[in-house]
Length: 105
Image (tube, rainbow, N blue to C red; front, side, top):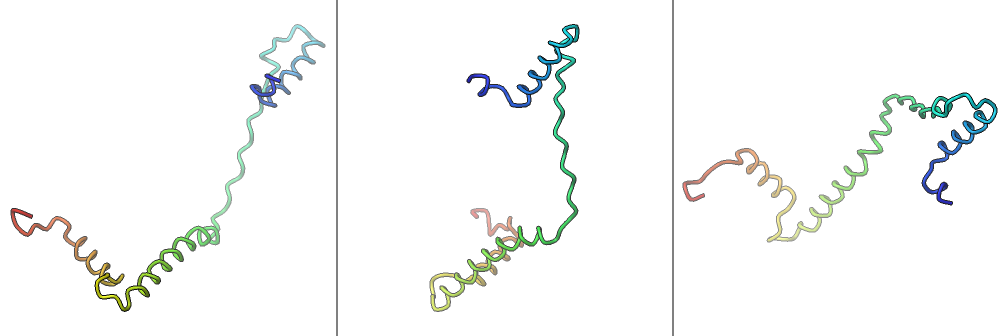
């Protein structure tokens, strides 16, 4: 039971094969018989535009839905900024982020 938990199936198969070979020819060393083959790498797939679309479409639709709901909720609101007002304030802030209005700013 312990060997099933702590040993991989590849090691067990290699050890069993080596044991049967060693029983037939005991002169061979054990290390020469055990050769684990590395798993072959899968071939690279060609660029597919549909995969990119399926990865980008959900976040774009989610962000559009968020901005749309925000715009609808602020149509008749006077105190809450609209997405347009927020965008204008962000453009002004990010255009000159280190502007100083004086020594105390």
